[in-house]
Length: 188
Image (cartoon, rainbow, N blue to C red):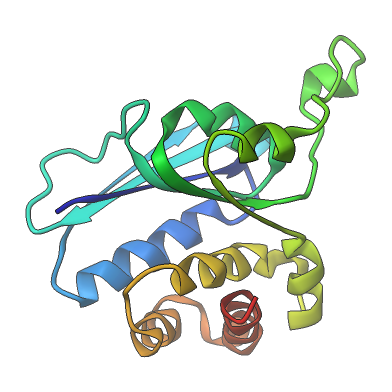
């Protein structure tokens, strides 16, 4: 059995650290894992998408439309863009934060309304204000690990494995904040 997880967000939100934590966690359990990062203008606030597939034998990291078991979305519009990739019965975990893309900033487009409602019609939706929980943990930059904590709760991967991988993956000076962020997400 193969699991397919997409992580979507905007450059600078920490999606790559989230994919590293996820990948290292499933490797620690002995699974074959493939990770592919697709960058838009990530340094300019553009879309960033990471595919993570794991199982007994995985031959490609690419996730096609309708194949994602879980989509971890760091921002609402990125969640909406990724909606075609969720499989029937899949779960989308969405940070309710809104980050205006350039067309919205310059006034040539408007930010879509009621995104979470539209998503909830198509899949299992978990929406949360991960920014608030990250602030509670001690840093806005911990949104990524809050979301990993929320996702971790819905997997059959032991809590202790996640915590150990965070210890091994996150730089020591940020470890306490990230462990707290993970626990806040996990306990949601």
